[in-house]
Structures are given as structure tokens and as C-alpha cells.
Amino acid sequence: MTAAAEPLLSATGLVKHFSLGGRFFAKGVTLRAVDGIDLTVGRGETQGLVGESGCGKSTTARLLLRLIEPTAGRIEFDGIDVTALDRRGLKAARRQFQMVFQDPFASLDPRMTVRQIIGEPLWLAGAGRAERKARVDALMEKVGLAAAVGERYPHEFSGGQRQRIGIARALAVNPRLVVCDEPVSALDVSIQAQVINLLKDLQAEFGLSYLFVSHDLSVVRHIADRVAVMFLGKIVEQGPKRHIYERPLHPYTQALLAAAPIPDPTRRRTRTLIAGEVPSAAAVPPGCRFHTRCPLATERCRIEEPADRTVDGRIVACHLA
Image (cartoon, rainbow, N blue to C red; front, side, top):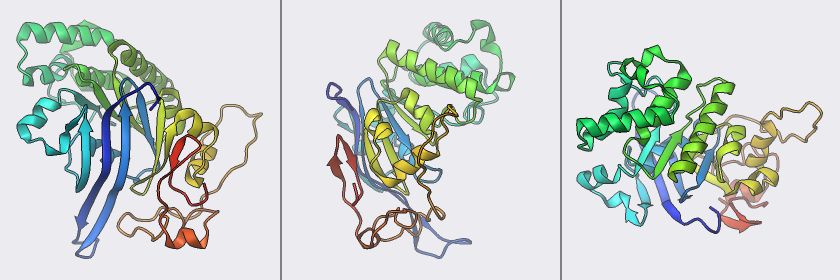
């Protein structure tokens, strides 16, 4: 978050543990999907959340909107404690924050037309037929869909068009925050750029705040103002985009950036190799949870979990930073 931006959404000590058991896990095993994170989304800004598959990014996104209930922690939206809201209060609050899902086909009801899909949140909010029609027509135009296709069904559209429908649906009730959970990962690269540019245009027009979840650092670089890097349920580094991309401090961030392709064959760079497999969230290593893969790990890393520290304009959890 820049100095000028005030927090719109903030999570403090956010935890989500799942109790496992049965066929594949012994009884009493706990999956530590999100294991105590602090995260803030500024007004009118885009907060990126990146990491490998299985690190807890999507679980975090759903926790922040209370689509799943946190085990512990506090979530505040514009000063309101979201974790304390009852069902009625949460229903009213959800007009302020919406979600764009990863799969643009599975997230759309195949039995509903495009016009019905986009208008459903308005219907649930009690809007009349005329108001719904006017709003849906305006949104379809905003996301680049002709009004004439409003009576078609999701299977009649391409992946990029379906994601535009999902974006229009998310904007139907004029939210202030949109959580984008891997919104372009299922799309071709050229279509990814179109959707990213659309999101940026809509943000500028409506003053939206985004939490943008992705495993692709190159995509996040194009849209985010701030970036948080997540590994095995913890945020290991977060700060302004410029600091994270130009001078990463955590070895995991360095390795992720080194692995990202650069569209310039003349450039050379030093790669930080990550050895081994990602540990299981059901058996988190002691000490720094990245030490089993870190080429720089010391004995201290193996026994002592690093605390968050402010270093060079960002927060990093690493003994070596």
C-alpha cells in the first residue's frame, strides 16, 4: 500500500486449519492451509498474492470474503469486523465485496442466460426488472459484450468471453473490492492481456480495489501495486511491487522471480534453484518452513521460525534478510 492509500480490507492473524482423517490421513491430523497471516488491501489499489499451487492463496481469498469460516484471526472491511457479522449482516456486507473465480466456465450456471447470470446479484438485492435490465446492458457494454448476446448460454462463448461475463456479474452490485482468484490462468496469453487491461480500465473508472491471486509473477507485475509472496500457509515477503521485483530479499521470492521467463534472449541472470518437493501443510517443517528447500538455510533456520521484520521498505520473514 502506498503512503497515500488507506486500508479498505485488512486481515490480522488469519488462520484456517482443516481436521483430516479417514482413508488417506490418520485421525487427528491437521492441515495448516493458512497459518497466521497479516494482509492489507488499500483503497483503489491492487494487492497481488502469489505463490506455488497449494500454498494457501485461494483459501486466503475465500477466507477474506467469509466463503469459508476462519479458524482464528480478524478480518476488517472499511472498519467493520467481518468475522463478527451474523448471516444478515454478512449478506448486506457482501454487496461491498465480490469475487471473480478461476474457471470461467464452472463458475457460470449453464442453465442460465448471460443476462440472467449478470442480473442475478441484482435480483437477490431486490432490484426491479427495469433497473436490472438497464444495469445489465450497461455492464455488458463495459466488459466488451454486445447486448444482443444476452440471451445466449455460457457454452456458446469462448473462455475469455466467459471471464468477461464473470467480471460483469461481480460488478453488478457496485462493489468496492473485487477478489480475483487466478482469473486469467485458464486463458491463452493474448486473452490474458486483454482481461488484465479490462480489469485495469474498470478499476480506474469505478475506483475499485483488487486482491489479485496468481501463481504467475509476470501477470501480477502488470496489475499489482503491492505484492505478497506466500509459501506453505505463510506470507514470507510483502511490500511495494518495485521493491519485490527489483530487489527481492527472501530466497523463495528470489527463486520464483528467477524461474519466471523473460522475453529477451539476450538477457542473462543468475538462477536460484529450489531443491526438493513442497512440504505438506499437514506436516509443516519446524523452524522456517522453507528451510528444506532453501540453498542458504542455516542451523538457525532449521530450529527457529523467523518473525516478520521491516527491511528496505517491505516486510520479510527470513533470518538472512
